[in-house]
Image 1 (tube, helix red, strand yellow):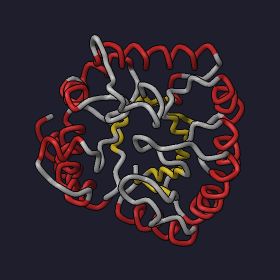
Image 2: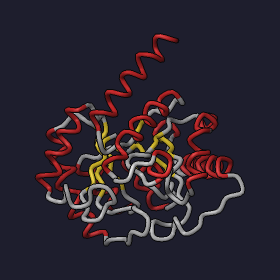
Image 3: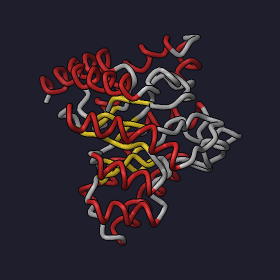
Image 4: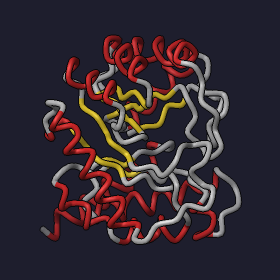
Length: 261
């Protein structure tokens, strides 16, 4: 899953793809590098980020989604928490809703029910504005797993089949370094939920703490390492900014795993 932020303030690439034409070309390039999903987002979810209006979010994402859906064979995902944005994005060509709030909004569930779109339910403690203000868990793995299971049950009650859903533990979203590392170590425990796992660690700040890299750009190689680790742990989708090196790492990891099967 290639990250396509059409925002002025995302932590790693804010402003680079704000122009719709530039964003479309970036999406096409990521698809050519091997991204099978393009995740388009018009509102930053970095720690401390402030929300934007639905109107502004739609202005940013709809031209990009519409153009990519016509030009690319990649699946289009809309990264949003707003039901109205999700609905319009699906109408313009998106087929997946990537919701960092875990599909808790009944209106979002109704959008999924009406449109038949797939969805990713992610765990987040708090909101982007508050999530990194001293998050506390008694047992982070157990609590994240319980939250994701509740998301599945909520969707089922709303008439949304489990087959349309994937789950994301939300690395970096309301978690300390220790929480992130424990979740990564115990990723396989989430397979008990029976749905594909999506993992987003690309360029995140905790990578500097564990690798010693100083800049956002230097977090590329720890990201690549964790992509290979994620595949070994049975993760189905890795969400990344740098598609080509991650695709190469995944292909090498797949070759090893298939040879050992």
